[in-house]
Length: 321
Length: 125
Image (cartoon, rainbow over all chains, first blue to last red; front, side, top):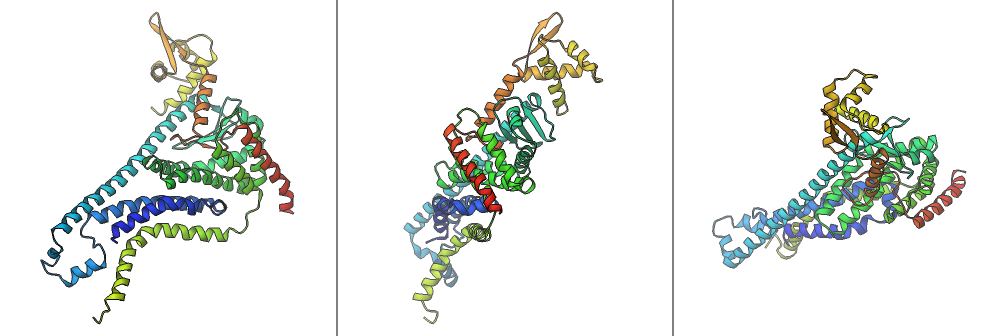
């Protein structure tokens, strides 16, 4: 097997098996920041392997395995390669073209998807923020503005000069300390630039619709980022305060607006806030290993054909021969 | 035109608080009670607001009468709708503290909250 094919196989593997590995409920939720990192590593690893794999097929300078590499070294004279024959050369050209096409397609789609996501998102957020600047009214808390509405809602508009928006309905239903916890949660989103992580994954999902890895990454990372923000808010304001804020906002919530994923996420958020953090060392180690493996994945995949060929050589062509 | 952002809000505020449409001169006189400001500045900002679709205007003599296209409540409702929709799969990526949930989902959540609050004392003891 060639380096290129090995890398492409790795990319496909991560795209379809990665979600099974990472959406294991408990682990990522215990250390959400590492969970986010693991999903990001998986996504970038898959895209990177796809591009490099295609290029490896396309560029003839990359030896397609130890066999050819050794052959090139030992028969380092012109004509040695010519024995391969015309048919093989024609096949090689087709493979090279296909490799180039794969690399260009993956890179192009990814760049288009992520770029579109970032550009559209920024434009929409800016428009929303501009309108807020005129419509919303100042709040007693710095950094937050009030929107007149009976719907109890708190959200933030990320980007330059990010704003936290609290509706008058939410303001009425939250106590002073609960409001503090909620604002800390939103502040964590803004400072952590969580929207960028989401935008990149959303862009990849737009570029490669139907690929399980990207679709699930968007949903999962969305949930994990909420948990990251919860953790940060809980440090300052206490977990009990955050739980009661969640409960107040959920009981006064708007007429039916279904968002199943968010609802399950809220249940999970409450559950993990209600049990004190314990035993995070194991998931932390497991996820760190995941991240490292995913980051090194393309390199490992590229090495597999060499290792296989080397093993083959050692077994069948002893050096003494 | 970054610096005009605040002024846009102030001028819309004035127009929303009035029942009748106003000319640039009237808005200027109103604003001058609180701050030093040039006629052309107010004119530019109101012109921008008209161009961006916040104000409509109709000629009255040699000037224009300006009126908000929609009330503040209507704009608030519009922004809320946008914010709620952004909980779904859009590029707006606002980050909600708590996305809106359906009635049965809210009920399921309240059960989880009750459980959590019941467990709390035991956990801390």
